[in-house]
Every structure is written in C-alpha cells, then in structure tokens.
Length: 254
Image 1 (tube, helix red, strand yellow):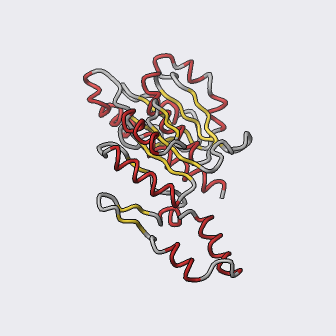
Image 2 (image 1 turned 90 degrees about the vertical axis):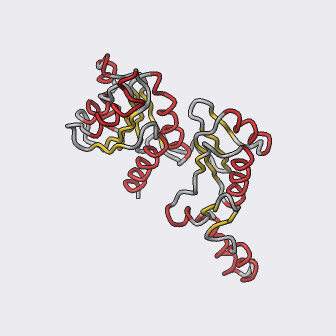
Image 3 (image 1 turned 30 degrees about the horizontal axis):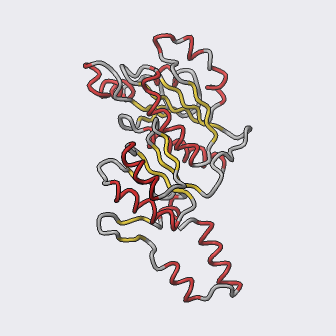
C-alpha cells in the first residue's frame, strides 16, 4: 500500500467515513500477499518509499502478469525489469494500461504523472561510453524517471573520443549524481569522476570483445579506479544504479 493511500485510509477512519472493521479488511494483506510462487512485499513502500519492483527474468509470462496485477491493485505505480518482448506481449494483453520499452526492457503501470520533475529540479546525469551501452543506460534513466526524478542524458561520449565528454562539462558539473555506463575497459567512469565533485555511480556493461570477459574487465577497472567518489554496481545493473542515485537525490531534496 502506498503511503498516500494509507494516510487517506487513516483520515477516513478518523472522520468516520470508514469503519475500523473496513480499515482492518483493507490492511489484512499487509505486510505481504502469498501467491505460493511469490510473496509480494506490500509493506515496502511504507518502509523504503519505493514499491517492490519485479525482476521478470526466468519468470513465466503468467507469473509476471499476475504479480504485476496484484501489485497494481495496491500501488499507484508498478515497475517490471528485464521484461522480454514475449512476456511483454502477454502482459499487455492482460493489462492494456501497461507501457513497455523494448530498449530498456522496462514495463510500467502508473496512475500518476511520471513526467512531473520540474525543469529547475536537481538532476541525475546518465552518460554512456558507446551506443552499445545504451540499453543499460536507458534502464537507469527510465527507472529514475519512473521514480519522479529529472534526468539528463549524454550517450556515446566514451574515452576513444574524450572531447565528446568534455563538451558536456557544464552539465556534468551541475549534476547532483552521475551514472556512468561503460563496457570495454570501463575507463569512462574514472574520467568522469576526475572531472566532477558529485557522487558517481559506475555501471560496467557486458559489452566488449573476448578479454572483456562479459563485463568483468570493466567491473574491475571501475573498482580499481584512482578517482575518488565512485560507487560501483554489478554488471549491466542500470536499475540498481538508478535506485542508488534516486536515494541520494531524495535525501538532498529532503
């Protein structure tokens, strides 16, 4: 249950519009709903300010659709990650209000305006080394937007042509958090962190030739960076980087 819904429910009880028994019936599914194959954490939004997000890889289409539908009954916004086109097609038949993006592989449902971030709001900047890194970068950027954050993108600004990155210096300097997405040797993150004073979240990607070891080389480069102020998430984990950046931004705004 969203915090706003719980506040409204308690206000209705206080005013007499809702009886205690009616409120108890609404709350009886907290803190989770048991679907046998999944236990939906309906209490997470109250604890963390973010509803549970569904990792859809290795789930059946029916499992994904049912989980999304049940969360949708309790929350005003629901997000699924790593959604294949086949699963998305199945879910969209069951839940026509859902929106799917094939690049980021995100599927979302929302009753609130997700584009409500003001132009003067603090922002997260998402940069990527190459166009091949863009799906992971978009997973991060679109997750941030789903969470209500302002995002500025700068893609294909890798170190093979560092002048492209330096051309973005003013935007980089004004960002509150930067998410740096890079494969190959992952050097972009070190360069970015050496240019700015804000926290930088490094996202190594699995993009690269054989000795990239499906992202391990980029991961190790970021972990071993000599530039301070870098946090590194797992390979291809744009979603995790977005949540981390969102928590920093939310704390700043609070």
